[in-house]
Length: 543
Image (cartoon, rainbow, N blue to C red):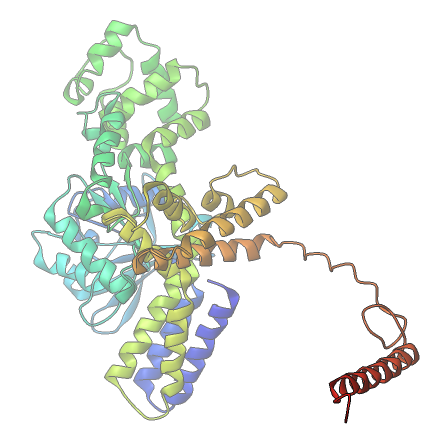
């Protein structure tokens, strides 16, 4: 969102504050909206029960601070935001707020609810000094379609409320298989997160993808084929910007790898091939008593719990391939897990649109405030909402991307693919939109965007094009114009025609006023003489 739109949204909140002066409830809501406008993007992690949400969240954070057991805390909406010092705050349903003790065990953060049940807690706020949280608020949610109706309802109430926009700006949705409940949730989130614009604000994750191939070393390849099939699914394509296969347990273990674990993996990698293969044939065989390795059963059980049998097999294979340090092993395992691809998708699709998505939530809340508490003097608010809707081009882009993924854009095949890219389907950076190398020189970027503008102007001038196609062309031209403005792409002015200006007032031949006057007088005398001669010729000769 441009600085002008941001300032307009701030002006809109100031106008609303003046209009609702004296209304304490409305002013409290406006305070919350102002906070939301200036805080980082809210990214929720959602999915069905046991989809691996908390495990993936730990991988994204790079620390084991999200609860992954089946206790009460996994049934509560939990926010993770940046704080200079660690702090945990429990917000109760009765409105009270309590600080929680900070305890860690075996590197994992423990949540002490003080004997309270999940039904008594509205949400938990975790502040933690992690750089990744400086630009992103991560929100862990209870599983949907849970046997606990209250836990599932808590997630639906938070992410897809019936009478308000979603409290999250975007969502990473985890699924092990594509179910009807997954599609239903994503449809509800699209409608409540972006309103009538029908914008796509979700990324789908094929979670626990190492289990797709039963833990075989090629499991992630099988998972990628499944994810690509889901991406082409008509129902899911309109609801998510992509489907990424991620082995969450592997990613969490790799991001938090300890030196002792690297030493244990190195021990396994050094075994004779037959001994190693017999030991890694299954999880049950791996934790049995064996003379093939000096690793104790307790150490092997912990490796299995932290990485899964797939992670153990992958780690030993990577070490045999030449990795010689724990940091290199961590990097290689993270790369294999699919986590980097997910982070890149979030970075390219959501971060650049963060301000627009946040402002959209603010505007939707103000619309509901006007309906819930109408009063005189709110015309300025309504006008500001209309201006935002008209100027927030990124929402139009997301809406068209949803159309492109579901039913396709109403253009020829090549033009439709180019339009989807220019609208930000592969990222919102100028080079990504234009389809050129990221390191292209500035002059090449300028030439490319001007060439594209010329091409799409021709397409938009097609006299037989349908209205829907012209609307897409107009949106593409708007995106290209913003790129041209950002990169400073301009065309030189045409040179002025060569004209020799006269020395003074005169005609095109360069004669001055005196010369023109003399010639004019001679012309008049000649006309009079010709007139008299003509009259004389017409006189009768005998008259």
